View (cartoon, rainbow, N blue to C red):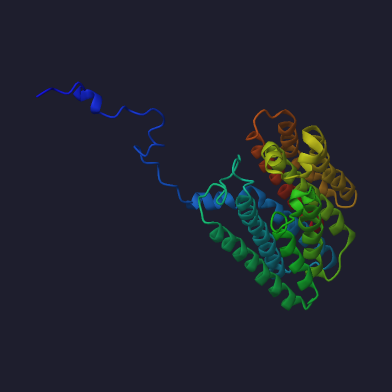
Length: 322
């Protein structure tokens, strides 16, 4: 019987090249689920001082009218501000994540974009914090009897959601800073004063402008960090529209202008001079914004600006009640 001309070795399939993982020979690592640290990071704790600042200034200004501290109302105002801040952070995580805007990002972990948590779960958490803000706001209205302020509260929640939510989010059209100034500066500060004192002295308005500008500066630092990714994703923030150099200039003006307001207030309330100590973190943040080489450095600038804000608010509170 004739032997086959084929060698036994030739019957073996030739090995294929390429990535073994793609051929299914090596199993891919299972997707990571969000940890408590991821959820805390997504809340963006660095931004929370921005919620405290207007409550400090607004409460101090209220005590110029009524020397009594209405601590229950002040505490409710703080709950509203902090809950809205956390809620909008989670809402942004959800909305940017489902759009694909957060596919590549530096800074805190993105729950939705990083596929660490289900979008519906992130949305539910955001709505939960909006609900907490609503409950605290209703408590304020019930206690003060200013029922028309329910409309103001509803407007705050709507503004928080449509920053990046909905079909046409205003944060994608370069209007983020305007709404932050209005709601996290003017409304938060003046509203805190009004619900405690029943009127709004001019000091509250001055402080509100300062708080709003510092909140806008934090947003600018955040958007400067993400400018390249936002351009790719089609997110037309103010920073994308005006570019890096103009953003640096505007950031510097927004950080320094509140201290000019503090100097004016110090002519009547001498303790306000102490707010100039907050220039230490403020100038450090400005230096980073002008000299940074890696986007991650701007996370530090953001945190320093946020620290500047709460220190500024604390000194103005002291000046008003001192």
